[in-house]
Amino acid sequence: MTPKRDYYEVLGVSRDASPEEIKRAFRKLAFQHHPDRNNEDGAGDKFKELNEAYEVLSDNDKRQSYDRFGATGAEDMFGGFSGNSAGFGGLGDIFEAFFGGVGTATRRGPKRGQDLYSELSITFEEAALGTEKEIKTKRTENCPTCEGSGAKPGTSPVRCTACNGSGQVYQVQRSVFGRFTNMTVCRQCHGSGSVITDACPGCRGGGRKRFERRMSVVIPAGVSVGSRMRLTGEGDAGDRGGPPGDIYVTLRVAPHKYFVRDGDDIHYELPIGFTQAALGMETEVPTLYGDTKLKVSAGSQAGEVLRFKGKGVPHLNRGGCGDQFVTLKLMTPRKLSKRQRQLFEELAEGLDPNGKKKK
Image (cartoon, rainbow, N blue to C red; front, side, top):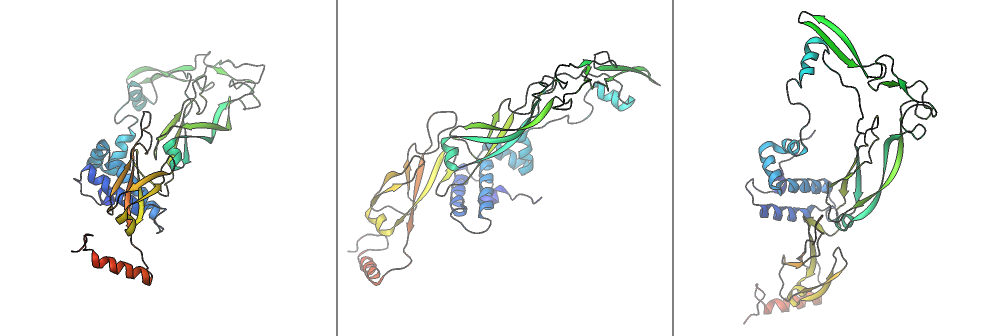
């Protein structure tokens, strides 16, 4: 696996850069490497790398973990830990280590179904404004023929004769340490306490079958790349009467042709000509909510930023919206006609380099 580049190097900032410096660096590079604005090979991967670096360094907690543990360590920190870290888990483990499984056993009871995981691709607008999508998944459900019992319709599981319905059997072992009673799960009924003598033809006694299902997912306004939604109770069916698992849907958001998202704010570059910047103009600018009129004042400068308040992405799970920022991008004509060149030369004679009239 290729090691990830240093996130500070990706954004071109120092390790002690302020949050504002990180934001400015990301905004500049995001415009430069946006896949719809940059046709070079690898632009999409570069844009993805920039988003990943900014997601970590713009979050104070994630940044501190990254500075301390690196990319892999930070992912572990935020992904959580599972399992027993070291040593024996309890008395049963000690018996297992020394006496080959001498200890206690618990009868198998209801077990929760497995969680399922899915990915869903949506557009920039759908993530910002919300939508409803359909997903397709395969999940384990109770057999409709036997309703999950595993027994042929009209019959029922019978009590296990090996354990007398307890699901457990006892064995006595002797060693130099003394006499030990070994309680294990019954091999005949696998701890359920009952056995199926006439299996259901639909599931062959398993009690469950796998089906392909389609379901609707309501995506709230304001979600972002990597957001994960939980569909409670839509995972695999539980075992022995246990509850079903859940489905976790991870969202993949396609980049926009014009917009770059920063939190709940949106950034857009407006190309204007020299004369438009000098004389001012009115134009229409695209927003998430349709084209909106924008007035560019006379004498506006390249890089000047104008704001549409409340035209950004709705805040997730709360009221209000971010803003849309419009950056003026001065476009210099590459070719001039003879007459156009003459007019520019006449204009240059009457203006100094700062755009003021010469005396």
